[in-house]
Length: 109
Image 1 (cartoon, one colour):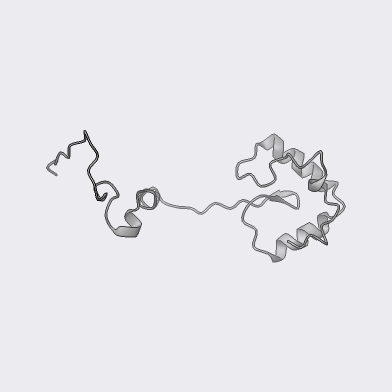
Image 2: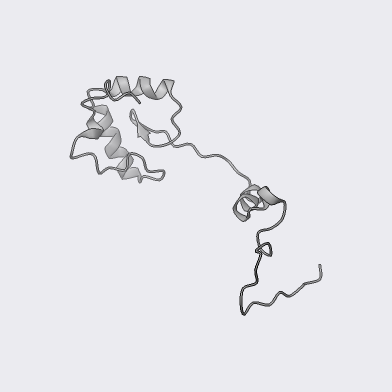
């Protein structure tokens, strides 16, 4: 965002810098407070223009929460977290060494 056009923004005032402007899960009370700051902001229109022309996927900008969440199915999420999506194999059992005290037990399917 161009800082020249946003000089004097309400969110940059010392009493407002501690608000969760870039939080992905700000409380309803915090969002209401930030919305009030934006409503009284002297550069709100410039902020809204900046957000409209630039890809903004997180944070509270121009009076609204801009955080977007990518919808992922449970199976896709598990594959992503386990590394299975990258290798085609589960992460467990792919380490090049054995951990002491752990014995591998095969279970029949």
